[in-house]
Length: 216
Image (cartoon, rainbow, N blue to C red; front, side, top):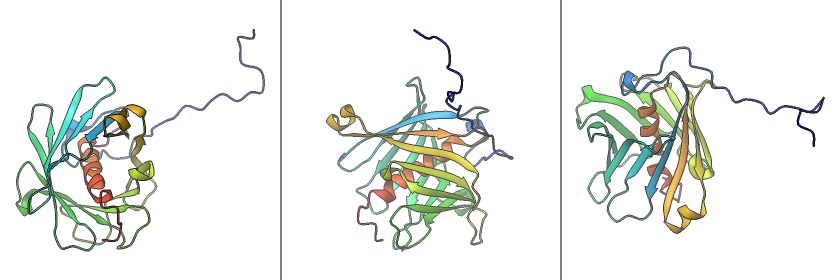
């Protein structure tokens, strides 16, 4: 039995995650890592009145939780750390054609605490694409883009209108998740990118994709 690599046979390539030129900090510098961060996000499907997420690392350690109350006038979700501290609250802007969501620091709703805003890039889309504007960006060019939509199995977060990748998401289909009625997907956050910010984007993406008509 041969034990070595036969001459001429290709060797599988190693995936590399080149760091961004400048660190991407939106929620806080404590959520930067010098290495790729792998997160697993799970949520129970069809939970009456709320849709909560658990975010864990590769060892199963709880990193974040997302709490929400959907049976209210405004859809609001709260991203909390493992100790239960609210890092950011997300709220949907009602009566907007592009499904706008605003993210505020902590539990604030004041304009000075606005971290970022997201909205659908186009009114009609076959695949979800979001434009993300930082709180101090009053222009028309987004700071980040979310392309794809994890319900189509994968999604990418890009820096502005560039091809610089910040994070990738992929949905996980398993027999256990079907039986337990849970939704699970993985996120790879590239080095020097705020992984709490990426999780917040995933939460918003989930809410927008939950509208299966895709015509709002």
